[in-house]
Length: 253
Image (cartoon, rainbow, N blue to C red; front, top):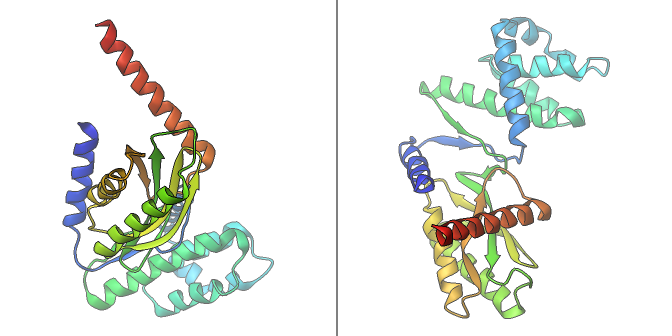
């Protein structure tokens, strides 16, 4: 299947990563990240890094426009100077609310540049919408109930949580939270980049289903964002309609 091939391609890319890499720990919307990198590319093509570095104190002036501050942050993040890094670091102590995420990305980029220069080797930077911690990525998981009309009972809830924590410990992962709703359960967890995600969560479902077969084999796993209840329900309804459509086609053939 195409999904299996996509999964294998991702795993292969992860396996080929060097041992030294950095993960963005902050949870920053992917769209905001793309805006930062696209803007930064445009700024650097203008070759104004030196001018922005020399005028970096403008970051701390109340009268400096938001656009100018974005320009300075993006430009000096590409300047191979410790002073540039310290400037962004200082700005992040009391940033403009609208520019905090922008400054976080600039600081990460500046850090990577200095590290590359110091170690004389290219650094790999990995960023996702949900961020991570250390060498681990954060994932949002949706376990789907076989009975979509009811919440799991107390015993089933405990079983899902216990099995999830057990599998995470066995794979050097970390449990952060779990919530139960009518029709599904959601959890935030941390896992090493090279963990076999598919196998881990399949194990959770298989173990839980030995005590009542109450979880669907399918699940939702993302590191892009925390899904709203509405988004999850819409996703499950679309999947249900798709399966129904497949069945009708087979019946008519």
